[in-house]
Amino acid sequence: MTEPTSSDSNEPRGMPVLVTVAVCTRNRASSLEAAVKSVIPQLTCETELLIIDNASTDDTPKIAEQFAKTHSMVRIWREERLGISFARNAALQQAQGEYVLFFDDDEVAEPDWLAQYIDFLRAPPTSKLSCVGGPYLPDLERPPPAWINSRHAFFDLGGSRRALTGKTSPAGGNCAYHRKIALQVGGFAIDLPRCEDSELNARLRDAGYEVWWLPEARIRHRIDPERFRLGAQVRLAFSEGSAAAAFRARRSGSVAKFRLVALGRILILPLHIAIQMAFGLLALIAGRRQRAFDCLLRVCRNLGMVRGWFS
Image (cartoon, rainbow, N blue to C red; front, top):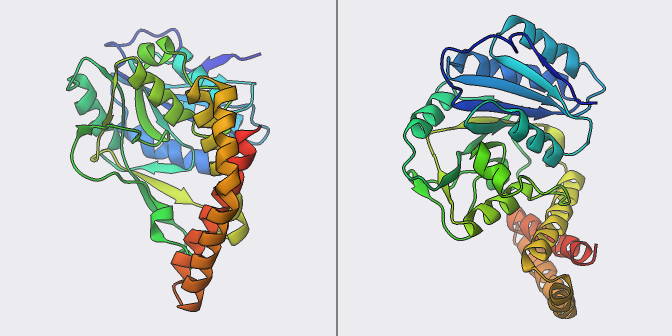
């Protein structure tokens, strides 16, 4: 059973809620505490913080309850169905704000992060705005290994405020959605292992809405050093490939047609992998370890796509 918890669920607010900051979390009590503490000082009378506890079994419920008891603008919702899409859809359904600003439990907000969103969303540049997001900056406990390209530690599309075109989208962990519009198009897909944010953004564009970039709204992404281990990077690349294939299959509209195209790609995949491995070997011999590592990840993504094409 999913039940709300709030220290002020029946108290009237001074003005309508413009932004609900939604933190979806599961079994990350220690990082959740740091994330929430970075947001609470930025809350205003037109904002709230909604913690979506995705069936945690550690101290997450206790920590969330402490925040709700001591801060009137903090609410909790427990979502028993496991998965980030279920948690994010629960946030869309339970939020009081016109916009739901998603913020991951392994992030720390820059001091003016929420103010940048409020300023932007008070007077949106277009009536077609459905989504706007900002950059991730790395917050590393220690530098990553020399063989990892630094771009793996952050996400930044650069430039100024603008509508994003093509397939370019902000990342889901620092992104605000117009709540009613997101629900209107069906919310986050629950049958995708990853890329659920990109898939939702694609449907929003299909419906005639715009996705925007807000470079001033920065967060710090706290990255566990374990993520930079070779095995973790390989598994992540394989998972990304599998999710990308599932995303494309869903977007194709015809599973049979998509699998026919996928079969053709599989026929040339051995050659593609051989070329990447050859480039990787040459890069390694030349001492260009980052280039060699990137080639390895491309191979892993391609193998992951094979799984995604027929899963």
